[in-house]
Amino acid sequence: MKDGIVNVFKPAGMTSHDVVGKLRKVYQTKKVGHTGTLDPDAIGVLPICIGQATRLAEYFTEKEKNYRTILKFGMETTTQDQSGEPILKTDLPKLDKEAFIKLLEEKFIGDIAQIPPMYSAIKKDGQPLYKLARQGITVDIEPRIVNISKIEVLMYNQESAMLDITCSKGTYIRTLCQDIGRACGSSAYMGYLMRRKSGAFTVENSVPLEQLLASKQPEQYLISMLDGLVDMPTLLVEKDENKMRILNGLPQRMPAVKNFVEGTLVKAVTLENELLAIGNIDEGYFKPNKVFKCGE
Image 1: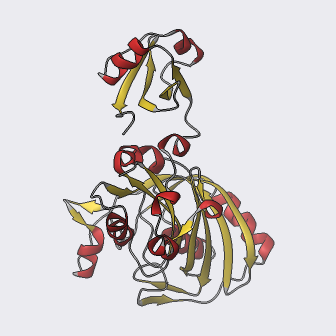
Image 2 (image 1 turned 120 degrees about the vertical axis):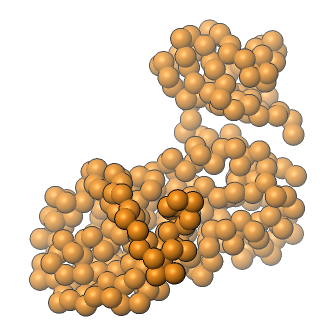
């Protein structure tokens, strides 16, 4: 079994966990995990980690995301998307496109407070919120600060809008759609969602799940751990004695460490282009946080 990341294009109607289950069979291993939940109704980029790469998931989850969404005005639903039951109907917004764009720029760009939806995988006292919601139980949810770096209006009229959104991890596009509707003096729900990018993984370099499942050589779709970490700075480890110390989890002082700012997270790589470890630069040392078995 090889280690790596598969950039899956998830179809609608499946949970992220469903995709993980299918890939466990494809790659014949239990060591499979996704890098951030994508709603069942949503489509798009869902990076899946295989083997040792499951230990990299946290680094991918932290990355910025890009979405394409269609927001529908005039109604709110229980789930904030088209799969939910209607709970509120209002008049359509009276803003023209110019006023709509201005509203987005003034209220929804930068750091914003967002209350995650009840129908989400976030846990309260150990229970996923969506399970409580299905039982008719509502709990108080603390607002979270998320960052929206870009909202491009691709289409707008009084009934709907198509938006291209770049945002931080933890952003709920469903909730953003609802909040935008309210800010317009109306209401809204999410009618469509595609994740176009998650860190270095994009729609353009993704593989449709159906194609992956039908393949007789699924290994061809594995992206190496190093390629998955392409935007993480590289610390080259040239000497065998340094390599062995790092593999044993020990801090190591090397000349190349001086090239990095204190606290920088880097990947330690051998001359043979193998991933040794991920760690931080600390007081002139490379201090490994996670060590990887080379040659496996």
